[in-house]
Length: 494
View: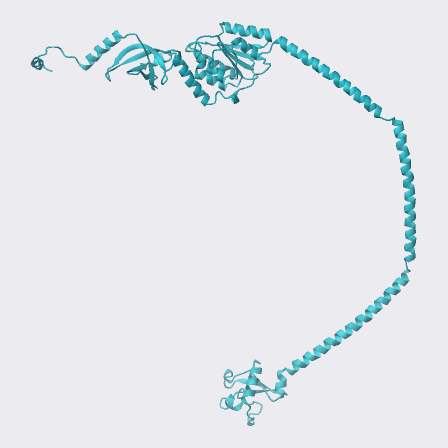
């Protein structure tokens, strides 16, 4: 805006740029609210890739943007969670890029025991839903451990009470892994100690504990909060070594009490549960030894009585041998008598068989007589069969001769064949001047077919016109015509 414009507007006040105004507002806000504590509920927590935490603080009417820089997140005693009521400590500042103000958080505290209990219950439900508190996961505590691992503060009264009680009861080897038991680093150290004990080799130079005791003295809910952290509960649930939790007093309850294999009301009680009393163990061993001795004595006494009863039931070995020898004599006598009877019966049967035997000559004569009869019967049967077959052959020969074409030739018929001997049945089948053979009843004559002498077969009754070649100068005598019926029969025959 030019000077003339300012004068025209009637206002002589100097103007500010947006950046100048933003810096002025930022200075005013940061000066007036350099240290503030706000009680509110956390909403939409988000951790950016840069490591900064962004979330919103709200109550029933208003909201306030909040940011916790990466360098401050490691120092937070409570990590932001959705719906958690907290008291946030920090300073107000402005963000010129969006024309808004926000709080830069440096510390977060739980706002009251009710909020802690709500967070504790929500976490318990989540872990229980994953099965970390199931009874099936519990491991049995060994009755006589040789090494016990203790996770607690190395300078507190808890470790002294545990060591004193273990020494009074029964001497065992104790490994102490010192950790913080309160504060923001306590949960990570306790979880690392549990995993460290669990990772020890079973046959290493340092004996791996047979059971772990996680102990801490009493305190408020905030003081025991490290043992409610998810990282500690998961470490207890995943530990392969049986774990005894001994946190606070009997009325104090933490989440590791649900994940541990056994809960002790106090650290001292944990030592008592882990190791039996030496005097009690000695008394128990004495009682067991006495019972064993009494049982052994009763067993020996019963065995002696049974041996005496068995001895009275036994007989003298010499008497037993004599009676067995007598039984053997009786058995041998019966055997000999039976053998004699058996041999006599077999001899008698053999005599009967000898009487039934016949001389070989008689047997041969009888066999020769039977063979002669069989031979005569065979000759008779052979002669009869041969005569029958000769008679059948004669009958067949007569039937064959009666049906032969030669009998037809005897009645005056002739058979005309070509040079190859095949019968000629039709006049059309023989060409003119063909050489043919004519067979009569008493012989065969050759002839040449003459075309000029062709006569109808129906008129002459001849199968083919022929001309004899044996006497060419003489004319053949005409033969009497035959009936067509005879010609048909001859044609069918040949």
